[in-house]
Length: 510
Ligand code: GLU
Image 1 (cartoon, helix red, strand yellow):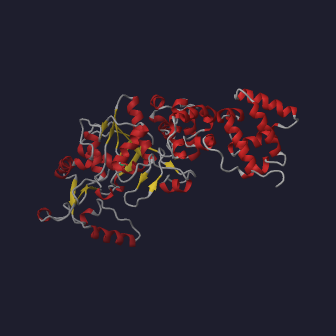
Image 2: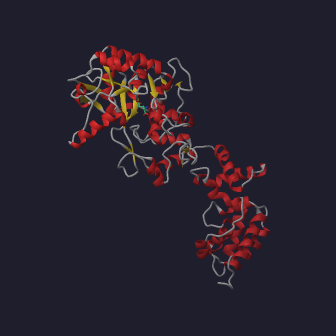
Image 3: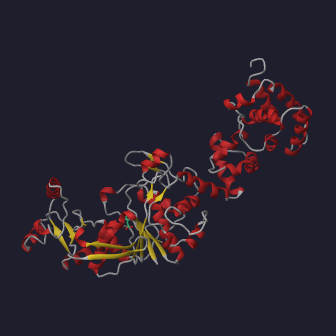
């Protein structure tokens, strides 16, 4: 099995493109085949600088690494179509010689005029068997005229001569049988006036020459399939097997997921952040948002495919094992940004403490604006178990544990209103004295002694512990209060209570 991912470098790779690459990769792995990266850049007008590098970096990040292809070597290169012009020239020559393709001299202006004429009559213009004799091409013009035009350097395109009265039948591995009447196809341009082939010609020639056995690509290419089959036939080649993948739909389920949906919904549609070289506009990426590549890949795998079991969490190896073309859905797959986060949470939780620790060090350093000392790094290691199950992204660590590193500057106003009562300052003054006597400073002992004091004084636990938490963390959310105090240390705990008492309203002011 030889499969390929053949992106056009017209911008950043959309997550749908990554999914196409992933499905190809999984199949290649599963069948001990080869996964090839081919860059389809024959459309010079749409080429965007940086896009090829972006594609490679995105695939590497996601762990969808080609075995062969552009940047990876192999025996079927070059793997970039702009470097294969001579090859295409050779093959188009063959079609021309056999009368299966022809020169067309119609200028863009002429074509435009005719198109408009048709439109004004409410018809659609198609360059096909019925009109080709009326156009300016090597089929309609006398041979000498064609020779004269070519010799004189007149601009031309080369078009495919769609055979007449043909029905094209293909089996798509996802869609089933596809049948099309050739009369609905137009004589597609195979070589443009700049001498470069169009996607259709280059794609077919390359798939054949590179020994591709299975073409797995987006559904948007399904309409081109009959043409591709006719091209294979024209060359006398056996076509590969085809599988067209369902679209990825907007979160509403209506229409194809676009960059605009991401902007509106606040989620990325690109694997990596992308800065448009023309506009300078930056689009967010999954990587930069803190997604793990394994979570991203897992989410994409299930967007259009199902394992036929209840299992949702897969590693790449498990995907390779379970993946199968027969379980690709026919209908579009609705993208759910919340579900993407769920996959991230699941995979993040599967990391070891050590792995998470490595990720939260830089987050903490960024927030503090300085590197952590060795001692602080160890402190971070101790904090982690208290908050780890709340973490979905490395960045969440600061949200849940920032107060371990910095005294609260402010106290959550709603919490103050609810928990800081008239008698609170008095209670906390006493708590401070009780805490000052506790040794050793360990969560279990603090809990025991403080609980005893609360009970002896006939106070409710909430009345004491909630304002205490507020004083220490600035908020009511957080891990076990006693573990928190142990980590903060006695002195820091007492100091934070003192600060809160100074800053928050005393009984007299209320
Ligand atoms: N270059 C095409 C694209 O950008 C590839 C389509 C195909 O896989 O045949 O999607």
